[in-house]
Length: 137
Image 1 (cartoon, rainbow, N blue to C red):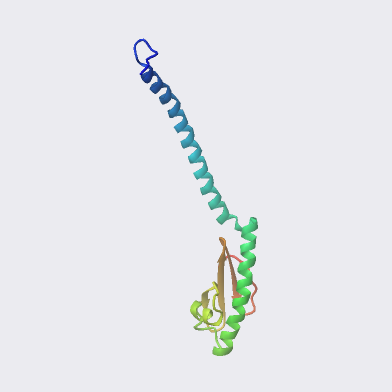
Image 2: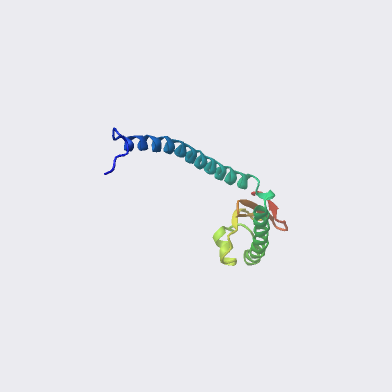
């Protein structure tokens, strides 16, 4: 091994230089990581809170409302068979409308409320003769 230093401590000097370089790089990397994690959490919170102000939220609302109208037709078929909304459950709705993701929140003899959540956006339909609207039942 060729030793360029008269006292043979080149490895020690190189180690100290690397130590001085690595510590700031680790601090910068940690700061960047914390920033990105915080940004991701902030984005997730905003998406849930402002769902109707984002294109995805508005699209979710439109899809939910379309699903509710389709499920409402299935509820009409259920009423025609039973002459009442009493006993209408999510599984009974799924029997009338296979594949639906709409949930029956409540149903009694004369009324019901259906609810759908798509992309953090919840919409509902209170019937009979109701129209889809934003928000839960």
